[in-house]
Structure formats: C-alpha cells, structure tokens
Amino acid sequence: MQSGRGNIFFPHVHTLNALPRYNGLGSALFWPVEFFISLKPFERSKAAFGAPDRVLKVFFPYKHTALADYLYRLGMQRDKEEKYCYFTIEPGADIEQFRQALMTKVKERFKELNKPKEGLPDRKQIEMRPVLKGEQYWKPDRQARAYMDRLSPEHSELMTRYVQMINIKRYSFSTLKAYSGAFLAFLDWCGPRMPLDLTVQDIVDYMCICIARANISETMQNQIINSIKFYYEKVEGKPRTLYPIPRPKRYVPLPKLLDKMEVRDMLYSTKHPKHRCMLMLLYGCGLRLSEVLALIPTDIDSKRMVLHIRHSKGKKDREVPLPAQLLDALRDYYRQFKPMTWLFEGNTPGEPYSARSLQSVVKQAAVRAKIERPVTAHMLRHSYATHLMESGIDLRYIQSTLGHSSIKTTEIYTHVSKYKEPRSPLDDL
Image 1 (cartoon, helix red, strand yellow):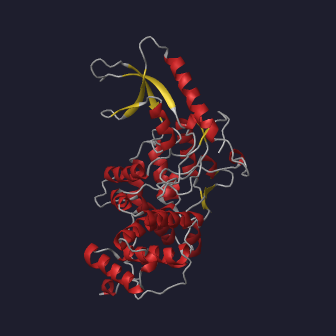
Image 2: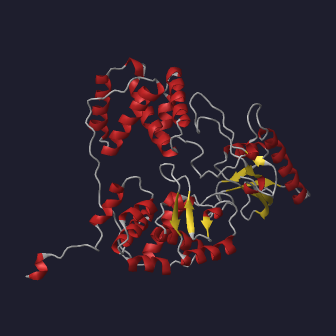
Image 3: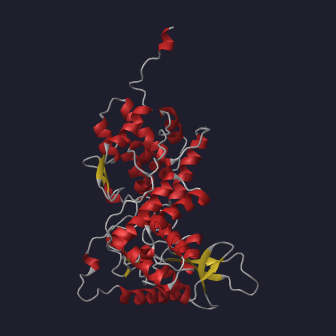
C-alpha cells in the first residue's frame, strides 16, 4: 500500500530461528513512515527527582517489533506508571532539531531493509492490503513457551518445518495458532521419541490421556487429531491414516439474538460516531467482528450501494447491500475522524481498532439499552439473519449475504425465526 506522503517504508523483518516465533517465513510488510511513528513534545508532570521534564513523546505500534527494537537502541525509554514511551531532551537542546535528526536515523536505518532482493520483484510496486493486528505473526502463550523451552534440537527443527508447511499451504492465522499449540503439546508428550517412531496405538493412548486428565472439549479433541494428522500426512508425506478414535459430535446451540426494539435502543443510546457506525455495520450488514475491523475506506462503494468484504472467513470475498442510513453515518464519521489506513482505527494512527474494544462497545451499548442478558457482537449478526428471514427474504439470499459456504449453516436460523411459527393447539382450547 503506497501513499503520497513519503517513499520510505517500514518492513516487518523477522529472522527465522530454530522455532519461528512469528509467521515462520520472515515476510515483509511495507508502510509509509508517517503511519508508524509520531513524535510530540511533552512535559512530564510526574518526573522523578533530578530527571529532566522536557521529553519527546513517541506514538508507534507496539506490535511492530523491528521498529520498537531500533527505537530502544536509539535511547527510547518507557514510563511504566503512565505507560508511554519517550526520548529525553537534554537541557538547552532544540526539540525540533532533535526530532528531525531522530526521524532521519529511523528512515536511513529502514531504507536498507526496503531494497528488493536480487531475483525478486520490487515489492513496493505490488499492491498490498494492510494486515490486521495479530495476523502478521504468531506469539506463543505462556504454556506454549514452556513447551518450546523443553524441546530438543531435533524437535525444534521438526516444529520449524511444521510451521513452514502451514504457511506454504496458506492456512489462516487462526489455524496456524491452533495447530501449532496442539502439536507443541504433542511433542512435549513424546519426550525423547520422534513422532515417526510412534505407533497408532501410541497416538490413541495420547488422546485418551488428553480426554481423561485434561477434560478437553469435543472441539479441542478434533483439533488435536487434525494437528497430528497434518504432520504425518502433509509434513512427512505419509499415506492417509484412519485412527480408531471416534470423532465426537459438536454441540450446536441455537443462535442467540436480539429483538428489533433492543437493537434500536442500543443504536439510539450510542452517541459516539465511531461506535455507532460499528454497531450499525454489525447489525445492518450482518458482518462478523473481524470483518468490521478489516474494512478500509475503499471498500465502500457508494455508487452501487454495496460494501466489499475481502479476505473473509474461508478466504472468500463477497458484497453486501449498504443501507442509505449507514452510508450517511459513515460519511459523517469519516469527515470527523479522517482515518489514515483502516476505516476504524484505535488511538495509534495506522493501527486498526482492537477486537476487545469493539466487544466492549457492544456490551456498553447493551447496558445503556437496559438489556440484562449478556450481549456479544456476533449476536447482532444472528439478529440480522433472523430478522431478514422473518421479513420473508429467501434463504439463498441470506446465505449469500452472510458468506456461508453451505446452506445448512444458514438453515439454523429457521429454528428461531417466527415468520412461519405454527399455532399451538393450546391456543384453541
């Protein structure tokens, strides 16, 4: 993604260690400098005794590890109480000159990383879509890091090939996270043995241990089986094997939804333009939470009155109708906030709005609307589909709008829809 504001781009540069901590491929993402770093003069009101008060406050994406490491090497510090980063300005020094010198160092440092490699096309000329926070790398949790510390060199090399194969097959980030965590636990159970030395009965014993001791759910049980099968069949190229482990049926609850009046009260009680637009997108277009956060301004087609949903679940694109009322609200929001990259951004320019914050917006709107039961963002999507069905809209159209691959997924809303609800014989007594 290019911008007329500058030609210097920051790449995400990560080395491929024995066990990749990030995406396993060391991929680079190029962004304009102004999207990443902002320097503002600031006077520390709670400075420690003897410390200077004149500082330069730094705003940048903390997830950008390459940029953060270089800024810390240049002398950046972090206030742990107020939770912000800053550069100390020496007494008598000019703040503007210090800021310009700092920006020059950062640009020169990353200009070398921006050069295309031999034999590869210049990636600045390739149109790239921004990557959501959390999707550009995989951070193991505390338990996964404990497993990684106990891995032998052979297991570490095996895990590297495992992550590489997931990336080469272009599986989603959620699949990478789930499979890697489950397979790490399996390697930890193997101990000094290699997975190729195990028998089918050993794998069955491992599954029985997970069910008996860890009390895993049906979904987790299927996930563990899939992660192990992926290693043997995709990484090692072994023939497909059927393990004598019954696949448990998943519990399929009815979708939880809201009444039209409850949705109206949530929208009317939300005065913040950004929060109101996000709620309207969740309900008015039936979007998933991740789809709302992944929107960019060019996804809005006001001439055709459609909204483009790109790279959605299952790597599918689709178009959904754009209500006129929602278009007016989005225009007012855009004029007021002027987002730089994403349609909805957080406090740091160029960073998307976080999923946790959006869930919090939904919960706060439910509290203002005096809805006592728990409300989530996905309930608005369920409400959208159910209210369409109650209005007599064809099931195939609802399937296409929601982006379901199978109509069986959409048919679940027939169990909660009231437009064809039969009359109870009790009413005739």
